[in-house]
Image 1: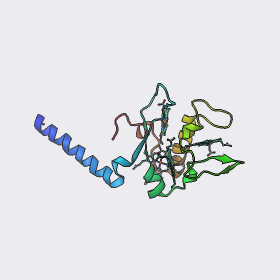
Image 2 (image 1 turned 120 degrees about the horizontal axis):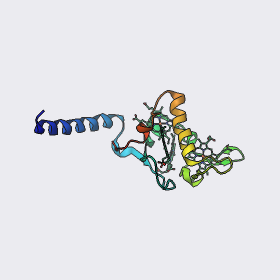
Image 3 (image 1 turned 120 degrees about the vertical axis):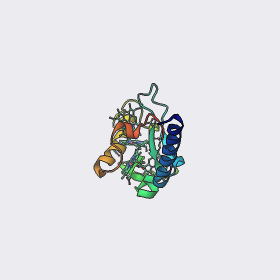
Image 4 (image 1 turned 180 degrees about the vertical axis):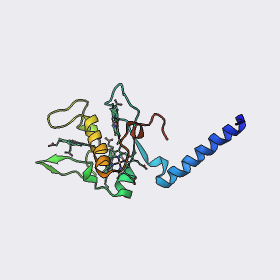
Length: 129
Ligand code: HEC
Ligand code: HEC
Ligand code: HEC
Ligand code: HEC
């Protein structure tokens, strides 16, 4: 391929991938989870399309968000939503570490449902799409 053709090919491939993503969900709807408690990160931020999960798939807010009081989940959308407000670098009592909690929530459901990414690179892409 001539240099000029390669450049055109790259431009078109880029455009095509934008179009494909546009069908699944708009790019600006992807939330990147990059909590600052992870000092010296090993992996890039994790892609998390919140609207896809909460609105399109229609997963109950309480499947992911919680505040437990006497064993009951009393979370509502005026309450704390930052997972790392409670889940820290290391487990504290019954509260598992942040990495474990996020992986258990995200990968746990994807495995159970047989849908959604379960490999490292799909959730932690080195190059943001
Ligand atoms: C379903 C999505 C998903 C998959 C699959 C996944 N992760 Fe994660 N991972 C996350 C999320 C979400 C966080 C929290 C990131 C944040 O908030 O900064 C996280 C956090 C981490 C962290 C702590 C932050 C850091 O960079 O030090 C590490 C390490 C990590 N993941 C490694 C892995 C490895 C290795 C694999 C593959 C074996 C993997 N993850 C697979 C979603 C995923
Ligand atoms: C599949 C899991 C999941 C579902 C379902 C879900 N959320 Fe979230 N939500 C998250 C995660 C993860 C974050 C980022 C938390 C963090 O920063 O630690 C978040 C963040 C938020 C935030 C903080 C603002 C923002 O957008 O970052 C609000 C508010 C929120 N969610 C409300 C809701 C409501 C209301 C519902 C139900 C209609 C819902 N969520 C359903 C996982 C979920
Ligand atoms: C207000 C504090 C708090 C916040 C905010 C919080 N958690 Fe938790 N989480 C807990 C506690 C406490 C437990 C342990 C409950 C028990 O076993 O009694 C827990 C348990 C879990 C578990 C184990 C299974 C379960 O649901 O009990 C997962 C997975 C989890 N959290 C993920 C998350 C994710 C993902 C977020 C953010 C969307 C989050 N947590 C936000 C306090 C919190
Ligand atoms: C209760 C179930 C459930 C939880 C919890 C959940 N997911 Fe998903 N996720 C799904 C399902 C189902 C799909 C597949 C959607 C499809 O292909 O139609 C999906 C798809 C995805 C995709 C691919 C989006 C696409 O357009 O292909 C990403 C990225 C993702 N999830 C990240 C996460 C992260 C990060 C978390 C944790 C913060 C998480 N998910 C928690 C059910 C879940």
